Length: 96
Image (tube, rainbow, N blue to C red; front, top):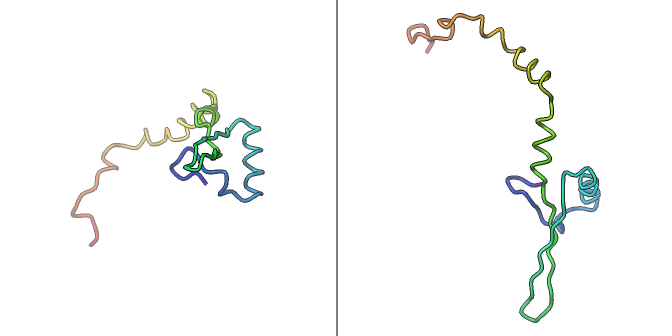
């Protein structure tokens, strides 16, 4: 829905999607915003948006804890045991 943007217009959502957005708002992942402007004929026009709470989302994704982060790093420690020359390629060994 959001693509590269942090907010989207409410009026582009289908009712089912809007219901899901209200649920995400209850979890603290989205917030609603609105802008008001005066039209040429004097009427007020309101535009409603849904905005991602990026700080909350980032905090939740980084909330693994030090043990899990350490394990994740240890999962790849076997690469440390491979000699450096294994990673080098020689051009005469390449198949064309």
